Amino acid sequence: MPCAGVTAFHGLIARGGMDKGDALLVQGTGGVALFGLQFAAALGARAIVISSSDEKLARAKALGGSILINYRDTPDWDVALMKATDGAGASHILELGGPGTYDRSLRSVASGGKIIQIGVLTGFGPKPDLARLQWENADIIGVTVGSVEHFAAMNRFLTEHAIHPIIDRVYGFDEVPDAYAHLRSGSHFGKIVVKL
Ligand SMILES: NC(=O)c1ccc[n+]([C@@H]2O[C@H](COP(=O)([O-])OP(=O)(O)OC[C@H]3O[C@@H](n4cnc5c(N)ncnc54)[C@H](OP(=O)(O)O)[C@@H]3O)[C@@H](O)[C@H]2O)c1
Image (cartoon, rainbow, N blue to C red):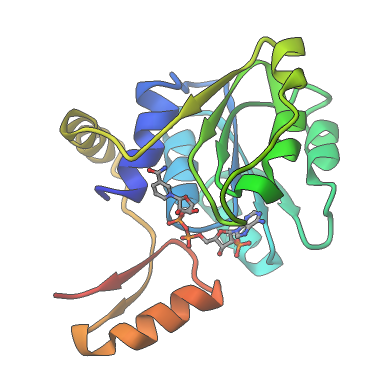
């Protein structure tokens, strides 16, 4: 909650102003993405989820995802997103991939939309073509986690909307190597917990 949750809350709500009627794109079904999806569902915003797995997309649908795209089967997911939104695009994008996703995020952003720059799942140092930002009057919001105030505000929001973080699996401290191996496999959905 103090990292993945606060990062999504800070970018999407505290600075991004996401609200009812908006359309959020989340990339994958890891910790930051699923907090974003739950926040969007609580606010009445539309959630667009891309994932490598149809099974994970089905689980994301149960959490409120409404446009579901498998990025393995559909590498041009930005084209599919534009089609599914009738050309409108996403008003908010949790940019979690970095170099491997950034250009498609720019091609998916709605007019006046916001790209919340957070992740490095495909590496560091994206070199995006920023021209589309200008054509769409769109913004980039750079985020490093958040403040104590963001944490407190997020906790109020979680309580108000009865949101429970999605926990994939809980490990004991003596199982830490297994927890890391599970994380590395990328098969998780949400957070992996190590009990101290
Ligand atoms: N800026 C900050 O302050 C901050 C804070 C927290 C995290 N982060 C960064 O944000 C990113 C996400 O963190 P996390 O904790 O949510 O990670 P995570 O739980 O490990 O997320 C992993 C998931 O991301 C998805 N993914 C991987 N490659 C992808 C790609 N090319 N396109 C779309 N989805 C892809 C996969 O989902 P599927 O299996 O569904 O495909 C994978 O299971 C990381 O790079 C992390 O370092 C930054």
